[in-house]
Image 1: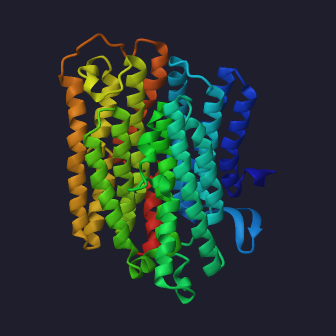
Image 2: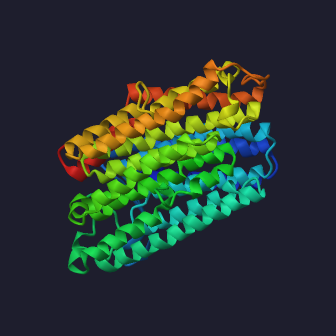
Image 3: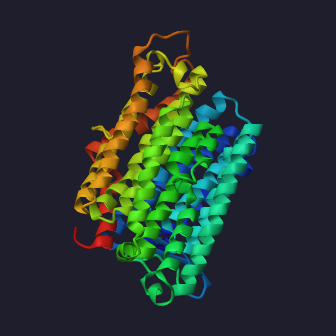
Length: 500
C-alpha cells in the first residue's frame, strides 16, 4: 500500500485529482459551498502533487508511469520530465488562484450553470496535466482533445448568440486542428514505428523512408494540429472566444489552452524532429519567420483595440509566438527563454485578465476609453495591471524581463540578430498600447461615480488572487527559480543540447 503513495505513482495521482474533483462537483449539484470546496481542495491537492515531483526529477530524472498498452510500441503512458513539469506547475498553481477568483466572480455576477462551469474547468485542468505528462503523441492527443471538448461549454457559457458563435468557431478551429494532429501522428508511427518523445527527436530515421518534402509537410500538420498556439493566420478563434466569462479567458490565455498549443510545438521541434533535423529541413528559419510575423502583426492589431479583453487577446497571440520563436531559434539560451516564458507569461497574463474581469464586475466597464481615473477607485487592481503590463513590455523588475533577456541572448548565440530586432520592436509596440491604459487609469480625471474594489466582501475573492499573481510576477524576476522553474528549464535544455 505504501508503494501506492510513492513517487512512482504521482503521475497517476496528478491525473486522478482533477478527475475526482470533476465527479464530486457533479454530485454536489446545487450546493455551491460543497462545489466550491471541492474545487479549492482539489486544486491544492493537485498543486502539491505536481510540486512534489520537481525535486525528484531534478535529482534522478523523469518519472515514468505506464497505464496500459494501446498498440504495438504505443503505451498509454506518462513521462514526467523537466519540460512537462514547467507546464504542469504553471497550470496547477494558477488553478488555485483562478478557483478563488471564480467564487467572487460567479457569485457577484450571479452567473447561471455554475455546476457545469466548475465541472468543465476541472476537466480542462485534467486535459492540461495529461498533455504536460504525456509520454508520447497518442497519449498527448487524447488529453489534447479532452481539453478542446471541455473548454467549449466554457467559451459558450453565456449561451447568447454571440457566445454560441464564439463557441462554435472555437470548436471548428480546434477540432480541425485535431484532424491535422492525428494525421501527423499516423505518419510518425508509419515511418518510425513509435510515437514516444525523445530529447533528440525520433524522426531522423524517417529520412531513409521518405523525402524531405514529406517531413516538411508533416511538420506543418503538427503546426496546424497545435492551432491552440494561435499563430497567424489560424488565430482568429482566440479574440472571438473573449465572449467567455473572465475566469475562462484566464484559463484560455494563461493556464491551459494556449499553453497546450505552444507546449505541443516545443515537443514537436525538440522531441520529434530534434535540432539537427530541424536545421537540415530548414524548418527552424521557417517557423521563426511565422512567429515573427505573428508577433508584429498581433501587436499592431492590439494597438487598435478599445475592448480591454480583446486587446489582451492580441497581446496573448504576440506573447505565445515569442515562445514559438524561442524554440525556432534552436539555441540553448533561446530555448531556456521559451520554456521559462511558459510559466512567467502565465502569471503575468492571468493577472491582466483577472484585472479586466474585476474592473468589469465592480464598475461594469469593458472599454479602455471609459477607464479614465479608475485607478483611484481600484488602486490594487490597476497597480497589479500596471506591474504585469510592464512585464509584457520586458521592463524589470517583472518576470517578462528575464525570459525575454534569455531569448535575446539566444539570438546572439545562434547568430540570428535579425530576430533580436523583432524582440526589441515588439517590446516597443507592447508599450504603445499598454502605457495609454495606465496613463488613463491613474492620471485622467474620474468622469463619474464608480464602485470600489473593497465595496463588497465578495470583491475580495477577485482582488486577492490578482494581487498574488501580480506579486509573483515580480518575485519570478527577483528569484527566477521559484518552484524550480529555472532549474527545470536548464535541465530540459541540457538534455537537448548537451553542455551549454
